[in-house]
Picture 1 (cartoon, rainbow, N blue to C red):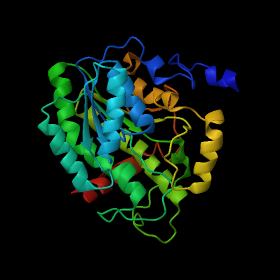
Picture 2 (picture 1 turned 45 degrees about the vertical axis):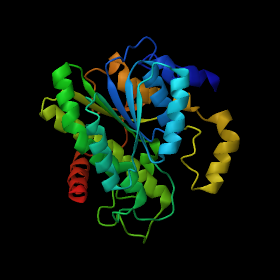
Picture 3 (picture 1 turned 30 degrees about the horizontal axis):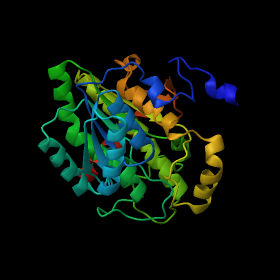
Picture 4 (picture 1 turned 180 degrees about the horizontal axis):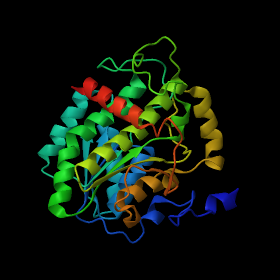
Length: 314
């Protein structure tokens, strides 16, 4: 088992590689990154490692008190860290718009956007905008955030001649969406709702979003790459809504799952590593690109999701 975890892929890294290891020797000074879901788990570790490499980080968090505590701990470990904490609730389109306004008020460029925040296995609930909560938080909030920040990323890349990077955290859970992939006409329908399939649907949407955005940016000849990833099975609190699974992960997770330092590795790799230069529209596991299964490769489904998402945010 340990041998499998140590086996290196084409990138030279393995499932056991940590975020610090995959970014060793990389100088991120002068770069600015936004990280969503930054107050815990993979998001917090991503912020710490980016700051360690000199990147100026803007933390998007639902709970600013928790975000402030994470910021204080990072600064304690990395005294030179430049970190801002801004409130961001991805399930609320008004909160996403406020976050972008507050970020723009900082008068910063934007090199890296990491769409990391997520929820899993919640009972049926609609967001304040009337959207099923998994879809609203995991996909639509990030779709809107990316849409509102995209021009800034493109302009920053053009002005600095430094490639912009958008990193979208998905999951192998995409394989377990509803049978139709995306339930366009039943997104907000409690009838037939499964919190397991609803989570899978939102993670499928993450990959489709990354693929279609990548295609659009290539057509525009923009110097911005977009990739999605599965961080691995990581012992975090994302499944706290499902008591049995949360208890199982809490007791056994430390023995069989990745730690957050390993879970953040592929995120930080896609954000900073030179090997990713020019690589776009790919799906990564353990810092190596793999071919996802259908319907994650369905171009027509990706276009339909894009148009559907635009209709919801406008």
